[in-house]
Length: 338
Length: 267
Image 1 (cartoon, rainbow over the protein chains, first blue to last red):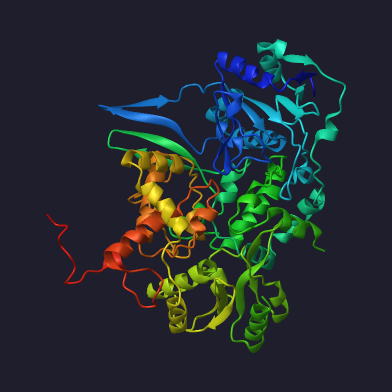
Image 2: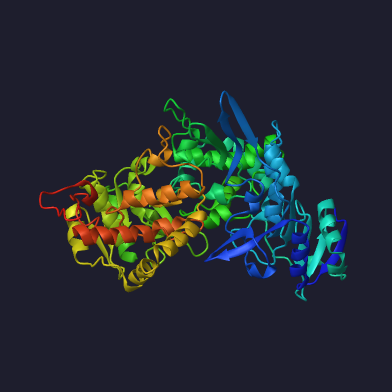
């Protein structure tokens, strides 16, 4: 639902940042470090990376950090003092892509499934997304095959699309988006009567999602398929850690004698340790079973339980895989199998 | 390339090996590891400048071992990894056929460790001028600057263990990073955890790393991890005159002592 359309001049982004900061918000935006681009806190719009199809890591860390303290404790005589975390700082993520914006709902569906994860939810509530739609895509992008598109509004509070003049067509999409506009109404001019479509990247649909989800339950027992697909997989966690929708975590207690902290850390189903039992038994002893789990979870189990897919088609896993495990290619093979 | 494909076809047809581990077409312009098991698939094999992954990493993988005797397309670092794995009792002579590829792209079949040793003896493994310059730049930093440099690099680490997974010498079935009783290395990707992991891993690879660079290529966040290993390899070479992966029977410099070892560092 679009509340309203406006025009944001390209040189107004800096002024918008200033207003957001003055309102006590931190701004996370894509910043280059060598050849990689990360969402980092920026003081000025000029620090942002200029030209990128996709960032190295997703903005997931803003709501689900790669390591976070759940609580700290301190023994005091016979008592234990528990210290919970303070409220997160209001945050604006700027320059994420529509696929990333769509991932927040997926994360939320897990963190508010049975147990309501207060830490995640308060972070999410304090986070606003000013998304920039995609004018370019590469061979790894497949958002349109999993229900997204280069100009999709899902999950964004404001969606910016760069038009011919270099200015942005701003779609104000939520109350959070409206609140940000209210901070600087003078920066948002009347929108031109331009269609954003012609400025968007063309991402062809690459497989039939319905066919894929229908075929997966049956493919489960096709050991040869999973073995062949995963033979070159090295079993690292790069795919899961660059993924905007992977939610698995590991709990680590770091304690000294009288004080300590409980940490939540990203985890990956690609690791052999992920399912290793204390007894030594591992129900997923080989990489092919871990690869199967990754595909089944994202495109079958997630779909059944969460009513979301566990994938937004950003392509990061395939871009970053050291063994070139191309997810799209494997999905196509399953969807198109007779 | 034709030579390689012909040899692969021959080896598979005769049954001398069951699988050729080589490079084939990948996503876009990339190449990827392929496991050729039928002679008619040999035409998949590619050998050019893009073929950098150290395929020796697959020689210790249970799933790949289960395919039967392997021939592996092996550039120089891969050949060194094979000898280093042999020196560490992970491979036995005759278990693997190396299809050695010279820097010019010429293929030589190397069926025995001795043949690999002789082949490698014809090359220098001194660092290139460019590699030396990079290490020198780090050496010239003050300890504080160097600390800052690595702190910034390690801060990016998400602990995906891509460095470990891509490394042919990281074959431990249970890595010490996975040990939690006691926990030697914090599993969390915070400052201490990341520092511990990378420093300890570098120490474990000192005099074992074959300088293939796969740790850095695998790293999704762009940490130049190979610099740590190169630095330690150079230190070991300076102190002990030893380079890893040159002989199938080789002592590990950091785990051995000799009567004539210098002791002048003890004060």
